[in-house]
Structures are given as structure tokens and as C-alpha cells.
Length: 210
Image (cartoon, rainbow, N blue to C red; front, side, top):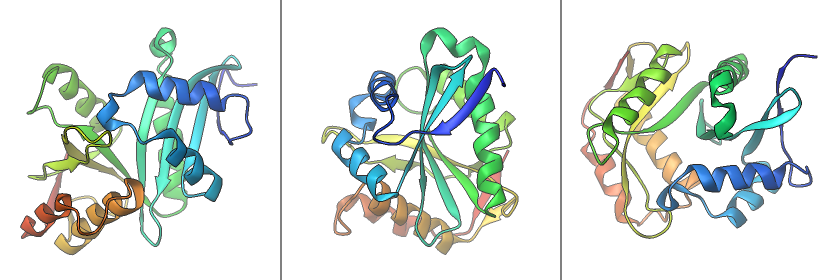
């Protein structure tokens, strides 16, 4: 048996509580989707909750959201148990899920905190570089606004993509539809919400930079 294994976690799985606890510990309140919504989405099959195991011990959680009728899959959340971060299970999971997504001829989308905003900018830049080493490309000139999931403040993010289909550029209309799908399908935003307004400011095709 491999030292590291990955499997999907159902609501009935005993590790569901551990995964949710790690999720709540690892992200700020304005970034967390309410747990009842996660549970309902998992029950309906709209999201996948993944667990990573090191020597059969729970070590990692991730929420993966295939967007309906889309070529994109969102890696929404990824967190590792703090005392096991040095085994690089996060990198191994990313390589694993990239392969799963590409087998379905889809591309993986990442929402990453923008290093030009807020605190801990060096840490944010290291996260961007981490994803770039795994082949992720940045949506150039896009400052993506993550909705305030706790009703307080929005967060400035980068969008990144990993996949074989798009290497250099994405059509403007495809990027606009992707962002609408993220807001409506992942974060349950009302189409009349003001957070949609900035999407119309995307006037050109978007370059992808490594």
C-alpha cells in the first residue's frame, strides 16, 4: 500500500467531520462556504470532498467543484493538517487531481489570493509560485473578486488555470462565462447582485502567463 492515498469523502464517511474541521480552521470566515450548503451540494453530487491520507492517517482535505455544462473544474479549497505539511501531500494531491481532470478533457481553475492586496503579501506570492511550478498560468490583468461569504468584505484574488487545452489565451466571452458560473454555481450569488457588474469591464481576450 502506498504511503499517500486520496479518496472522496461522503457525508456518511467518519472522516467528514475531520475534513470540515480542517476546512474551518484553515480559511478565514469571509472565504468559507456555510457548512449546510457544502453538505447539501455534496449530497446532490455538485461538489467532491476529497481526503488525503498519509500512512492511513487523515492529512488533507480539498473541495473540488466541476462546473455544470463547462470545460472547467474549480479547485475551491485545499488544506493540509499542520504537522504533516512537510511531507508535501498538497503537491501530490494537486498532481493527482490535475491528472483526474485532464483525463476528462477539462481544465482546473484555481482562485488564489492576490499578492498585490492585503496582508501577508510574501506568503501570497509564494502560493502563486507554488501553483506555477505545477504548471498553472495566471489570467493576466484580471483582479477576480471573491464574494464576501460571511457578509463582510470581498477578497481580491487571481484566477489561474492548469490544462492542456488553453496555453496562451482565453476568449473574452469564455472568461466572462466562467466568472458568472463561479458566482452563480459555486457561491450561489443572485444574478442581480452587484458583484457581477465588473465582468462587463473585461473587454479583450485574456492572456495566460506563466
